[in-house]
Image (cartoon, rainbow, N blue to C red; front, side, top):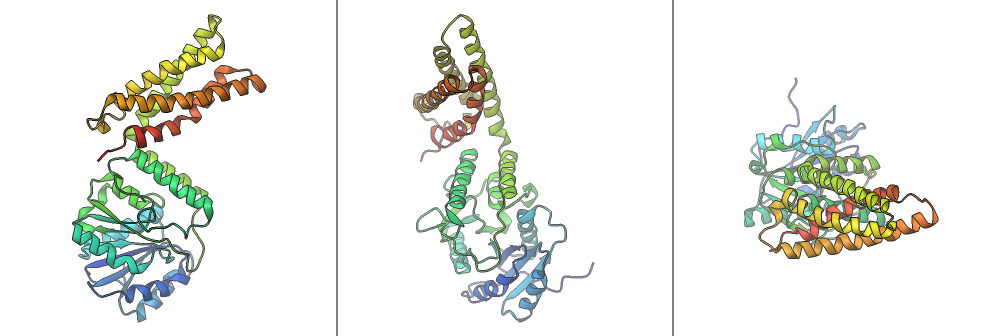
Length: 368
């Protein structure tokens, strides 16, 4: 295997830029990074999975750049963007870099914030510094339209619901712009998949994390790589990361659903009106589910807070949710499908994710 002609010597800071067909952005990104105050030796490492001429453009820019520019071109692209970042972190660590800054190659992450990320990390003794669109003066204006902004917000809420301890104080776990102290992260623990490498790093390890605001800019050149498949990979990543908490919640939900339907069927068999039977079944399973979730799902998040407060919040939310379900059930049975058991089962399944998010983010949220 021939040596990499662009391999950089060890530097105090390595800027890792995962790229996929980002040729139009390379020269401008390097120019802006090279213009930063020289507070520490700076290496720029492009980890490239491109299928176009981006590697050749990187080599051409590297030949005349006033700072060290390196290229790691991957033929297999294992792990997608996340896999590229992990490869970059391995090289940065091997070359002796104290800090690695991860950023996209499309200039939506402003290079001028790199010194602020590093200064924040050093001054506060942090392991990871997150550039957040959702804190202070941060803004997600560069996202393409209101739908992507909504998806970004919702994705962050879901992630923080599944990892309320590890992501405490992190308002933007979906960002791709952050600094990490190379000796703080155990790269062997990571299982990179898809786009959201920061979530992978924070969810798998206990790290000292801080954040600074940033304004998500407009793309300089090229096209966005966001796709529906990326969204599916994100959901798969979340399930893989948080299987421990989501699994018992789902199991309790399944048992509660079976109990709810059994009570409903039994009471109907005695001649009780189906809506009255639904109300009784809902009350019994709401209380039972809460007790089981306290014991088997959120036991590590109770944090000495009042069980009565948690019960009141859980019962109120589930009661309102059950009332909405009951009204929908009545409307559907009355005007469309006269099958209360089937409709009740479908509505309970639809409400599952909403209930999980509410309990993780509200009932068992970490209080200062």
